[in-house]
Length: 223
Image (cartoon, rainbow, N blue to C red; front, side, top):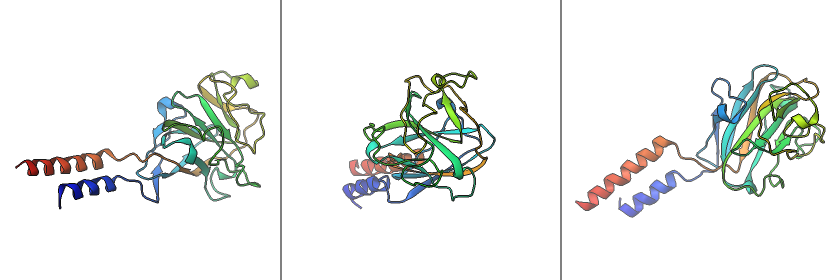
């Protein structure tokens, strides 16, 4: 195999493929950027499987998106199982500042699964990079502090906004905690989130193997 052909093969090996990659929550994902689990993929689509272990639990993941134009996130757990019947999704930037929140997916009317549909103006113009996606059961909301007051100004997103719309933040203060804004009637259980528009991130072992292979070919050519 020629050097040019091998190089092309190496590049093809790390190119995105048209299938979803699965990430399974390890233990219990944290609920803030500093404790979030890193969920990456070799493809443009990622499926996260996890569970809400107790009332008030929130799971946060650091994801890498290719840009906001193709980004979407939907809770795709089968209805009637886990937290799917009433979940909530939150998107934050790399500094933990709110970008968007949804309770009832506007692209799937008549049900209570959360979703951030592709093309929404709150995130369609985002640049490529790291972001944080969080899931909670109803009605756990992101706070700007660790207090207990449930007045509106204590939250990153307005909890009195229409629940069937994608809602933007009411403050630039980063998320600092979570609690039930009005009442909490969500359920524990498993969930599945399907995310599109992901930036493929090659596994370190894959890149190392490819790098060693290319280096070996270069050395052979020099001989």
